[in-house]
Length: 367
Image 1 (cartoon, one colour):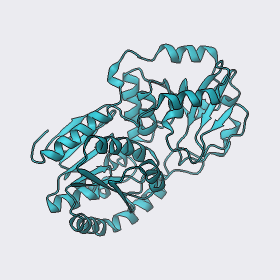
Image 2: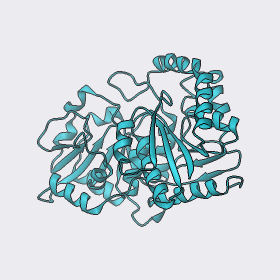
Image 3: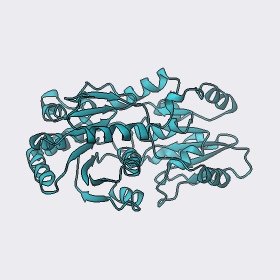
Image 4: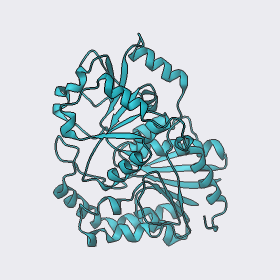
C-alpha cells in the first residue's frame, strides 16, 4: 500500500473542492493507495466529502495564510497580509522540520501539495518525490503585495517540487525539477438526477432564468442585499449559504449541503469571483460565467485572461455590479457567446489522476 500525504491550502474552499475531485478519482482508479489529508480550514467539509472512503485519514494542521481581505471588500488588505506573513515566516523552519518528522514517521511514499510550499522542502530532504498541483503558487500570488526578499523562502521551496501539474490559466514558471505538465479544468462529478431535482425546486414552472450568485465563502459583504440585481425580471437566484439575502426569488444552498457543483450545474448563468474552484465547476458544467473583476489579485487576472481568450466569460467590476440587472438582452448575449462545441473544456479529473498514478509508479521518470 502506497501512502500519499496530500497538503491542501487553507484559503477558502476552492483548493479543497478540487482536491476532493482528484482524491475520489485516485481511490477509484487505484486500490493500493491511501491518502493522508493535511489541512485545517475546510477539514469538516473534507471529512464529509470523503466519509465513505476508508483509505483516507485526516490530519489537522495549518498549511498557509492565503489572503487577508479588507473589511466588506473582495480586495486584499496589504498591510494586514504583511503582518500575518511575517508571523508565518517566523515558523518556517519549524514547519519544515515538523513535516520531515511526519513524513518519516508515517512512511510516506509520495507528497502532493495544492499548493503549500513547505512540504516540498521536507519531501526533498528525505528524497520523497512530490507533485505541486495548482493554477498559481503563493510565491507569484504575493509578488505585488509583499516585498520580493521576503518571498525567497517560498520560491526556494517551490523549486524543490519534483513535478508541477500546471492548471488552466496558470502563468507559473516550470517549477518541476523533473518536468511540468499542463492541464485544463477539472471538478467534482455531477449527478444529472440531482441537478434536475434542484432545477424543479428553484424553478418549478420552468419559465425563470436561474443565476448562481457565488461570492465565495470567505466574503461577507453588508451591502449585498441592496444590489438591484435581485429585482431582475423573471430571474431566480441560487446563493451560497453565507449570502444573507432574504427575498422570495433567492434560494440559499443549505449549510449542510456539500456537493455544491449540482447547484452550479442547475443554473443558466454563474456570477462569481474568479476563484479557480467555482470557475472550473461552471466550465465543466458548460455554464456561461460573469466574473467579478479583481485587479489586485495576480492569480485572478491570469484566470480571467484565460477565460476571455477561450470566450468563456464576461467580466463586471464591483462598482458596475451596483447598477447591474439581468435583462433579456444580457441573457441572449451570454447564451450566444459560449463555445458549447469545444470538448477541451471537459472535466479532466481522470486525466490528472492517471498522470499522478503514472508518476507514483515510475517515480524516477521525467514527464
